[in-house]
Amino acid sequence: MANFHLTRQLTTAHGGKIILLVMDGLGGLPMTQDGPTELEAAYTPNLDRLAREGSVGLSIPVVRGVAPGSGPAHLALFGYDPLEYEIGRGVLEATGIGLEVNPGDVAIRGNFCTVDDQGLITDRRAGRIPTEEGARRIELLRQIALPGVTIDIEIAKEYRFAMVLRGDNLHDAIADTDPQVTGVAPLPAAALDPAAEHTADLVNQWLAQARDVLRGHEPANMVTLRGFAMEPGLPKYGDVYQLKAACVAVYPMYKGVSKLVGMDVIQTSSADSTRDEFGHVARVWNDYDFIFCHIKYTDSRGEDGDFDGKVKVIEGVDEALPVLLGLKPDVLIVTGDHSTPAKYRAHSWHPVPTLLWAPETHMPDRAQSFGERECMCGALGHFAASDLMMLALAHAKRLVKFGA
Image (cartoon, rainbow, N blue to C red; front, side):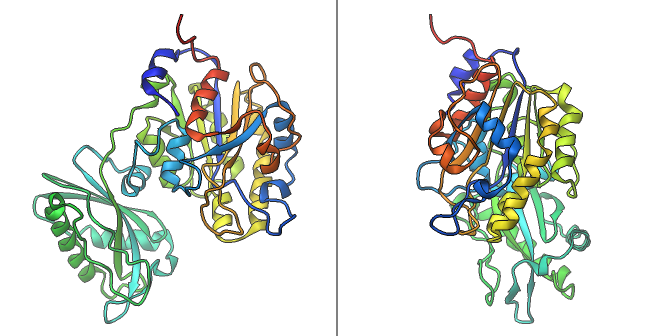
């Protein structure tokens, strides 16, 4: 994993250009004992060619046997030890939709939900209301005021929103108010540390007012709050890697983690296809040394248990890949942040297929295609995902020799 003291000594401001293409939840499992994984089943002539010309292996996002969340998994890909650097989900969501989270602020991720006349939750996601409906509820919530606190609140997507509290002596050690089940009432905000008692009291005042202003606005007539967090103060890409870096992603969370490590977030639309995203990469290619491009729906289809749907997403990425190859990157890495097998319907602990293509600097292995079983035998071996940035920098000739 990256040692930032070391990288500051070894990195140079000159060298090749890097693309990190992340298909969220890429890794999979066979649905039957002798069957293929989603990646193995997909028709991927471009990725298979790159595997033959490049090197492959399997990355471990956190430690063996641990299924990671998307935040720590992406931090690892960016070269940060996810056990040392932690980011709360509230900060990821808030920064991802453009809210400023400064030292001392508390960021919170919120969900609209549906409650009945007794205040019991009947739908934790308010029927997945359209984003426009969520935005109308946000206008109601903006009426709420708290003593000594400034509140910024914005819709994220559908039933999700983010909120930032600004004031003195705030603390983020507060338990989620989402009970994770229906048939019960939302939980009160509870301090997990005595220092957070004041903040928990403020949040409970806010929740009481939210209940009043949302009453009668079914199906989104209440909220739950999750992921209370403060700005983590991460080292930045420009400092530790001497890279001018950019993020091309559609979902707020991935924009958020990228912004927190110092990447510029390129403007995209929630309706952008894979080809559209690759077009954004091409549009800004001349302005950056490193571009992270994120594809969401491999993960979504895996969580849905939709094996064929996940295969189709992978095939769509492969079909659009010539857009990126036409940019002639010095290093192209294709991987996932974690595995989300359709068979498992959730993030899993399985190592993640990884492909490194760097025509001028890599040593090709004997892989003939890009898939889990080929990656098991590849030259990259089984390695910590947090080592990936050093590999990318080395292959881009952006590291000087260590020692005499």
